[in-house]
Image: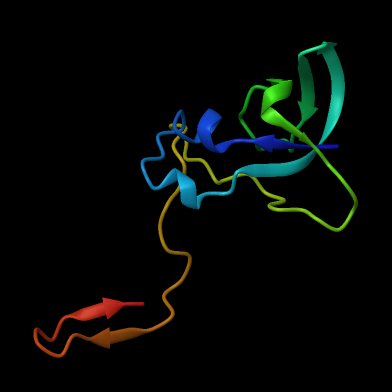
Length: 105
């Protein structure tokens, strides 16, 4: 089992233009299906993921222990390959005192 380093490698390719330093650095843990050579491995992804499964060893990190999983899911991707961004839910709406405009929190 390995974690996949995605921030510098794939998030920019998906069209994500936000702050990359705030995103998860590793996603996984994924099962190694095949060793291509000493520097490349093929990973097993869920069926809905549309990413090429072969990665260089510099993009992988060994899974240590069953307790630590930084992010079990890959980011959600639109049909055109960009990462879906936006709020997950509206928690509270309030009025700005000066302009009486609704502000979503």
